[in-house]
Amino acid sequence: MKKGLSLFFAIGIWLFSQCKTVQNSTNQNVSDEKDPESGLMLDQNLMLVKSQCTACHSAKLITMNRFTRTGWKEKIVWMQKTQNLWDLGESEPAVLDYLEKYYSPEPQASRRKNLEDIEWYKLED
Amino acid sequence: MWNRRGFLKKSVLSSMATLLGAEIVFAKNLPPKTLPLAFQPAEDILPGKHPDLIILNNRPWNVEAPPHLLNDAVTPGDKMFIRNNGIPPEGVDINQWTLTIEGEAALSSKSYTLKELKEKFEHHTYQLSLECGGNGRAGFYPPASGNQWTEGAVSCGEWTGVRLKDVLMDAGIGENAVYIGYYGKDTHISGDASKNPISRGVPIEKALEDESLIAWSLNGEDIPIMNGYPLRLVFGGWPASCSGKWLEKIVIRDKVHDGEKMTGTSYRVPKYPVQPGTKVPEEDFEIIESMPVKSLITSPKSGAMLALGKNLEVKGHAWAGDLEVSKLQLSIDFGATWHEANLESPVNRLAWQHWNAELSFPKEGYYEIWAKATDSKGVSQPMVIPGWNPKGYLNNACHRIAVKITAS
Image (cartoon, rainbow over all chains, first blue to last red):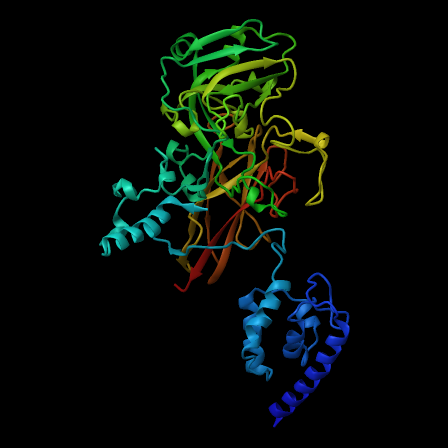
């Protein structure tokens, strides 16, 4: 019941946001401009991303985060498990493409990287 | 970036297996040298060097050691990093090799055969630390172009030769002497014989120090081909590019030497700290002289797992350019607390110093061991990456290794 209701809302908001996007975005291939409504980067997949993501939560939840493709996929799985997110189906790769393209980790966010590629071995006496 | 042993195991053996249509039993026990020559990658011919060195570049050769390979008190020739700018000379005939001293501030022009050098001047042996000016470049962001050295472009070998000052004084040093510059027999990678791959040097004051050598021997043997056989300069504590290899000529200059890679932005840093990514005008650069304080953890190799309750013996070396290291501290809690290690005095001036400590860990989990050296003027290694500079020199951030403590 709860699930059906939220899906109903989601579809409603999706339709709404889709209309707005079409109205706002005249040039959707420009990749360094933001959608004034959501603050998300303009892209040909923006409409799809909005339909799948910002129906339920703020676009800021995307724009303030940086994850790898795997990291974003984990967020989707977590939302599906705990937040009633639906199966994105064929849209998922396109959504992940978009998230990876614009919201990947910065090359180096800190002044010192984590130690990487550690080859663990048992230290013998 | 790949190491030769891993490459041979994975790639060559798997292609061999494919070709032979069978798995090679005990393939991992097969020493690389026993591989049929046909299966050796053409670019993998690096005589006299350890298979676990990390190859950054093969034309020209630029090869570094993983830190745990530098655990020896005195670095063996096969574990010594290679920073070549050109192609080393081939078919060296030591009976024909000569060294010439000349230049506008030399009182005479003199040439010596190797035999004459060895007979005429007193021999001296010193352990001298040599570190590439760009060691650690990979840590800078925005990235600086050039070989992406991590930690291992450093060594401390035992060099034998004659004092540079004895030879310079034999030729005669003019009152107007300011700098010395070297020329080697290596050739430019373009094949253009009119181009020098590198011709650097040091101020006359550094040249006249007791430890500044014209060396023909490393650890009692001939210098490895890639490290300058049969003759090279060695200036401990300064960027290793000052220590010219395959040495055939030294010029005594009446001005700062202006050979290849002395000018422009090569081996130079801004005179003042700059924001990362800044474009710095060339006239605001200065030549790097003494290298900054630094240290390495050489044992254990990063990634050690040991049971809770066991103490861990940690070892390494520390060096500080022209200065001495006065203190070495270790942290297992990301720099929150520090423990002082036992630090030995250098065998001689400009040699790296050995240190050791025994560490215990409070509970299971992931740890990093950080090492921080402090020089005799009280200057320490930074824990984060030090001041960014356009060419990515002088990264002396503290070395870190990973350790995991498991259930006992």
